[in-house]
Length: 451
Image (cartoon, rainbow, N blue to C red):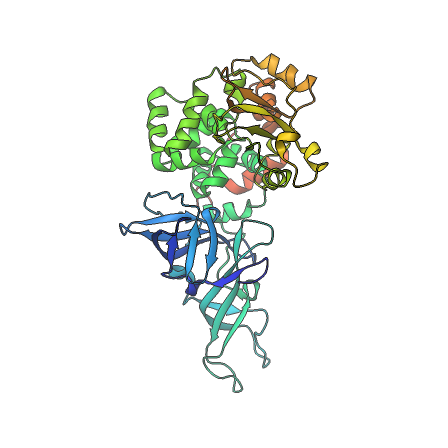
């Protein structure tokens, strides 16, 4: 691996040890998990199958891998020890892609005047995309079979993923995996629009095929009835995984729609830290600052620098409203924090030298919100101070979370605003109708789009 786009062939990862940040071995790599995409687009690498010391095979997402070095994989140390179960859109790289017969159609094919030729896949390489946390399969190492007189049997070469065919999904297919691949480029809100118009059967199948993070993003954009319906059709362990991937405030809103016994069952299956955040949010009235807030704002200690703050703000998966400011608090750094000292606004951070301490640029005059502040007062606060997010602080001075303008808007708009928007979207109705297919047809089931 070199430069800003590290690349490694997967055969070099088979069986290598996996270590936590302290250097303790937690298991070995047994396979890699990828998601195929429509056409010749390179597959996205989702994670690794790791055999832990108890011989159980678990899934390790690429987002929890901090380094792939010579002969080892380094993780964040956070592992989900539930047994790995392959999903419909997933392919095991070592188990399903290697030794496969495919056709060479691009570079190097038919160099002696012949047509496309059949080759055997010996290996594939994966690389991290520049300036992103995503990984993809980009190159294929193949062996040619018997060819022309000038070509030796067994000749090998490395080609781009787009130079072979026989892997990728076909756009005409109607399976759940093809639908997921076709919808991959849609924003979560747009995919939610499409799913809202699918029949309940098709909606459940597409939801089952999405990975946890993608499904969590889509659930946050769906009407409450659709959220409850989809969550109810997932296996309980999967439902808990998806709730963990959701923003804590959105997970709490969804759980609040379920009977108490179902709430408790799912909370028990969630990781303790994630469940604790959601339980805390469920303890507040819905239309108050405590009920609206997220428990995951950017929190920094007073001895952090402006450079530290800007590095946190640059995280690509951070919602824009939360990236507009950082909250300076004494330890502990996770909510509820130590004493809240003030807010450092993004624009102010840009005007200061990188070595400046954030404690010297905080706005300590801006009063925080109490967790029991009612929704109208929260709205007035954001409008009066021209803010897109506001700190929520308890009586003891600890930061509990932050209320963002998007969550306020969700509660100010009519309860059926999502349904109204969906019904007025002819484009998404058309996409959903094509996804469902004609009555009685399609590989997943041909019910007409539900309305």
